[in-house]
Length: 308
Length: 308
Image (cartoon, rainbow over all chains, first blue to last red; front, top):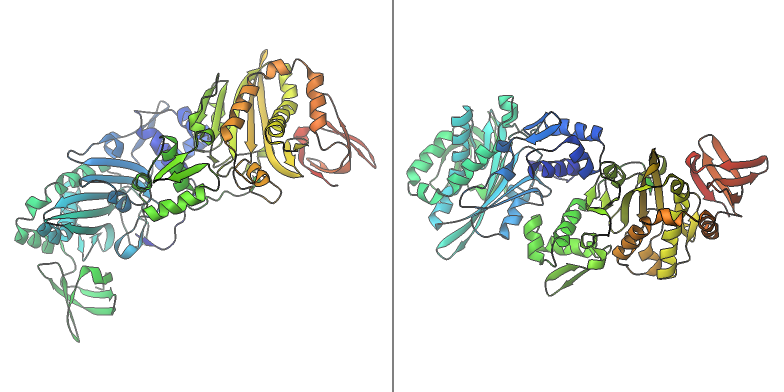
C-alpha cells in the first residue's frame, strides 16, 4: 500500500518481540512475556488484546498460544529455502542475497516497496513475502498473469470471494485492493532468475481507504499458512503451467475486471483516459481513447483507475 | 536521563537487529547482514558507520566484528543469572520476574525509568542494567552510598576520571551527569530483595545538555564489559562491605560533591534553597536555609541542583 513516509507505530517493536516469543514455543504465560519483554503484566495483557485483532491467538488458563495454522514459523514449505523473519527491511532486498528457491516471509517490512519503488505498508497480520525462483525464460512472460490467477483462484475456491484482477498488479474485491504483487528479474543464459513479491491483506487492518482485507470481508480471521503453503506449492510448478499459455491467458482475462471499463492511466509520459478494450498476449493493455488507441505496458503505468 | 515522551529513532530497530546478528557470531560480512536484515549493502554500510560511533566494531576484509570486551553477549558474570536482551521495555520491570541474583542488561530500553518514574533515555552504546539481589536488611540502608562509591571508584582508578557524587542519585563529572542509579526493594522476613538499576553513559552520546559520557570525556570508547564485570562482582559482596558502615560513609562523603555547596532542592512539598551541610548516617541531606535547617530524604527530593 503506497505511503510516502516511514513512521514506526509506537509499541510495534514490543508487538514484534511478543510474536517472536510466541513463535518459538507451544505457549507462554503472561509472566513469561512480562519477564522477557521487561514490561508489566497489565501491559502484556493490553498488547495481547491488540495483537488478537490481527493474529489467531488464544489466552486460556494463563497460557497464550498462537494457532499453528497462522504462525509462519510452524511451517516449512517443501522444496524451499524458507526464511521467516518477523521484522525485516524488505523481503525483496533480502531475497537478492539468497539462492533461487528461497521464500522470505515477514510480519513487518520497515522499507517494503511496491511497483515504481513506492513504499508498501506491511502492517501486522498480513502476508508479506518474496519468492526467488529460477524458471525457463518463456515462463517469465506469463508470470504477471499466473501470479494473480492463483491468488484469485485460492481465495475464490476456499472462501467463495468474488475477487478479480485490476490491471496490472492488483487483486481487488469490490474495487478495493486486497493484494498486490511485484515481479523483478534477470536473465542468466537460458534461465531466468525471478523475484516475486506478494502482499496480501489477510488479517491485518487494511492500511488505506482504498484497500480491503480478508478479515474485513469475511468478518473473521483466516489461518495464513494455508495461503502461504498454496502459493509456495503453486510457484514450484510455474514452468509446467506456462506450457499452455492460451489457457493462462484465458483464465487471466476471465478474472480481469479492467476490460470494458472506462479507465484513467497515469503513465510516465502523461495521463490517458479511455475504454480498456483487451489485453495482448504479452500482457499489455489496449486502451481506446477519443484520440486513438494506446498499448500500455505494465512498467510504464504508475497508476490505473477504474472510472466506472 | 529524564524525558517525557517516547519517540523511536528511525532506524533504531535496524540497528538493534544488526547488533543481534553481530552478537551471535564471531564476524559477519556485509552480505550476511544485508541478507538477514533485508536491506541493501549500501544501507548496511551506512548503518555500520553509524553504529561505529557507539560500539567497538571493526570492519576489515569484508568482516564486521564486535570487540568481545564491548559485546555484553560474550560474558557470563560468575554467580549471576545473566540475561542480555538488546531490546527491552525496562530492565527494572523484567527483573521483577526473575529470581534473586539475576542481572539484566540491555542496549535499549523502550520504557526505562528513573527516580519518581521519570523516563530514562537509554540510547545505544550505554550500559543499562538492573541487578536483583537478596541481601541482609541492614545492607539496604547502605546501598544508596555503596552503589555510587563503587562506580566512582572503578572509573577513578581505571580512567583517572575526577568524578563525584551529586546527592542523591547522580554520578557527575564537572557538574554533568555521567551515571545514575535507582534502588527499589522489599523486605522478606529477615532478607531484603533489592532491585538496583544502574545507567552509565559509556559510549552512547549523552542524551541531554546536562549529561556527559565516558566516550565524550576520554575522547575514545571503552569496552563496557570490564565495567559490567566489575559491577557484577562488587554487587555479590555488598553484605560484606556493609559490615563497616563507618568506612562506607566516610568514602561516600569523600566523593560527595554536594556538601558545602549552595543547593536548590525541589521536593514534593516545595522548593528549598540553602547550603548543604552534611549527610546523616542513613543518607539524609542536611540543608541550612535562612529560615531553618532541613533534613531531606532522597525519596522526597524530585530534583537537586548545585547552584555554585
